[in-house]
Length: 120
Length: 152
Image: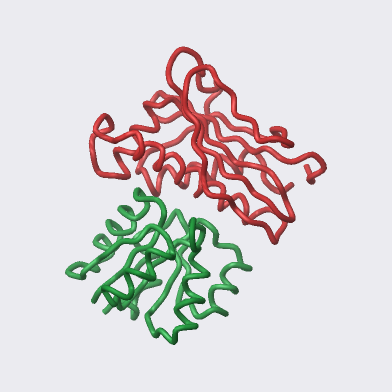
């Protein structure tokens, strides 16, 4: 599968990619983008199967990215990995079509729980 | 206000343990912001509750965190990587603090300041909580500032 990791922090992108490997999701093609606008370009060029996106980012945030993808009729599997995990934001994520929201800081187990069935 | 000093420490400890794999303990003394270079990571909360969350630490501690997060030796981390690492630590603690405060509110992108003998102030706010911590013999301070009139 092709996985796109979107976060304005390079450090966090590295930690997300490391955690994916630790959670057993190895052998997948992982690409990166540093905000929603970059992610839209990356999605056009690399057609990922799954997007793991931060919420709070410059240029275009994660929710705007998700809404734009839905507007375009995209069926890409989308989930948030964000420091903001309030009930209100989880509801907003779900209402907009996100499959999961993993809050930072996260564990390997949290990734496995969220991604089981999403990444084959 | 639902964020006590103990809560600030627990949130920071969870971030340190989960992200850095390091232990964090309560400390008596604040980080010495004197002749050595210091850094402060800050995120601002606006909306139903307004204020800021900060992490203040010596540059050496921020480099250590960057080394762990980027998988390099601390001294090999670039200035941008060190700022990124400290900003993300502030973002994680700030995001979790925000979840405990009145909503709806928004979290800013992190800001990082660095230098010697400096103080960071978010205009219109005053410090309401802080907790001093120790990590491997180095001190850092997690702070919470609130705008005037916010529940305290």
